[in-house]
Length: 146
Image (cartoon, rainbow, N blue to C red; front, side, top):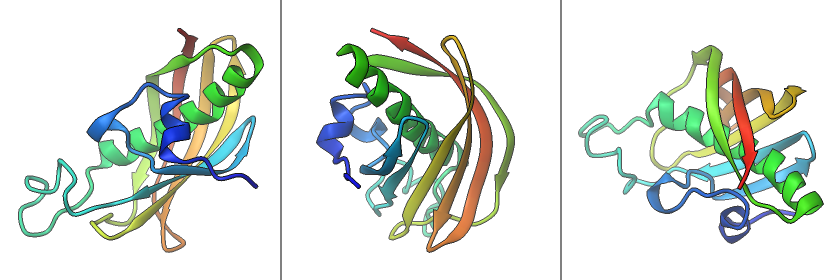
């Protein structure tokens, strides 16, 4: 199956610079996909969260999951219409942080569309490090074409 690079991702979702939190997407279907984030020691949050023992903030893990979900939906919409779009969080539910994520880890972000009603999309997401669950959540977003 095709692997989408950072350049491919930038063609579909609007995030740039330090706020683009996925490096590639794999296993893409119209309703699911796996984002990959190679966690680096020079990430913007490392110096302050926490000095000497950086741990990836949970909100950054969730945002990485959400960007993967946006790519899944917006890539399919782009293929169908030629239009780019945006995704906006509306809800985060049933969120659990199970394992710390640190520089050097490769975060696998598995997302699956659970429900769609018009522009509202609900997803189930899980983040793994070396096959071990690090984070899971159910979240919703509104997807809009630009």
